[in-house]
Image (cartoon, rainbow, N blue to C red; front, side):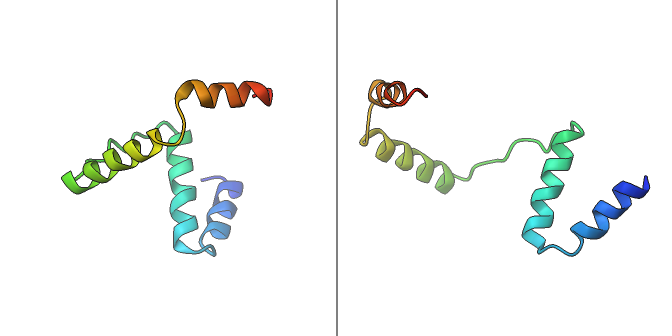
Amino acid sequence: MTTLLDKAFDVARQLPAEEQDELARVLLRLTGYDEGRAELTPADLASLQESLREADQFATDDEINALWAKHGL
């Protein structure tokens, strides 16, 4: 391990656990590590489907695209 990487880990160890985990995920992605796919439980899937149904009630894709275009996005 290089001195710089060792220093980065020393600094990261001082962070809260949640931030350490996020840094770990970023580092793993940067190195090409594949964490695999998350498996959704039936309850997770039902919740996701309900969220998507609710989102569809707010605006259509065309309405969103028109809004983005209006603001140059």
